[in-house]
Image 1 (cartoon, rainbow over the protein chains, first blue to last red):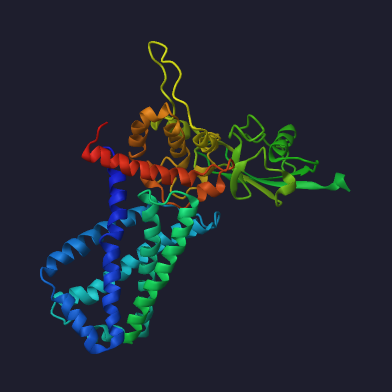
Image 2 (cartoon, chains in turn red, yellow):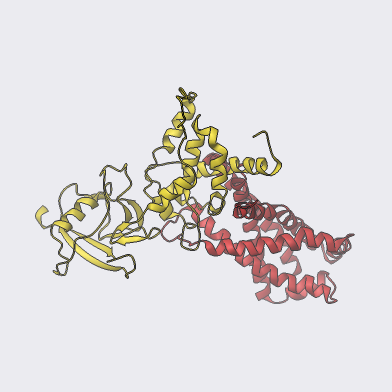
Length: 202
Length: 252
């Protein structure tokens, strides 16, 4: 792989964003959606996820390591771009800028969210409905969580579009246009799942 | 009334590669059908600024004057394009001219586009046919392929796609869309295809195809309408396969 480290790094970055991180985002939002069925239902689901065997290995290899790589390399990618949507206000250029912006917002959100939940849990807090409803007691945090979730689902959905181009799945303008529609439907659907779960805690 | 009509130009000038740019205004008498080049020639004939000060003529590059050489590319009213086909009648006034700052500015509107020619060497954008004896005629190209390959061959190395690309900048070593599309052109050629893996490996190096961020400004900006993003996406597929070949090994 000598001589083409950037190629391998970028492809790995693209792959990890979908597998496992994208899959994890879907799973996480769907499990959280149990909150809309009430306290009992959410606590049962959270206990099931929290009690999975080999949880620490699952977390490390499916979430933390890929997330750390995707985040650190993503910051590098975001800051090597010189955005120019003012001069070239084309749709894809906006998406290019938003992909980088939502990446940074998502990183801040995820870091905060990890601190409040996973790291709090490691320090002895219980992960349950009350934990989330305490966090979301504050309207500022509700807004922060909604922005964070919408930013994450956008970054994932639009990232799926660029995943398809990066790996050479969508080549023709027509294929890329159809993928734009499909990924935007995914964005709206996942945002609905995520926001309805958040509102259930409020 | 026509004799009273004027054209205003605001031109970003720069005296040498390291000096600071500054703006100068010129007012020229309107003539029918004038383009940016003829206006620059008019200024050269009578280099007097709008405020009456005499100045040195503007420096710019030009050659063919029919949008096939790419030399006279500059940023006109905020968009990079060729000065020869920028008709004054179709431009909003004042007409603002700037050099394409993605490239090193030599003087005024003249830039050094040699990075693109260096990129063509880097990606081996040619077809090696030299031998010690006559190799005979090469394989034929299917007409269907020739038609789209011809579109790619219209590239005049003008630099507009690099200027429009947000990922071609001083903090990145991305070579830009122009040499990538040429790789697709030469890989599509039946004789050129014999060296396709060499070109693919070249664009898999640092600053190569992986640096494309898919803003797709290039395809929107290309004056020749070259399907640059289709080329890049097709090369993404080819380099995916090439990377598997490199990693797992194959029959070649």
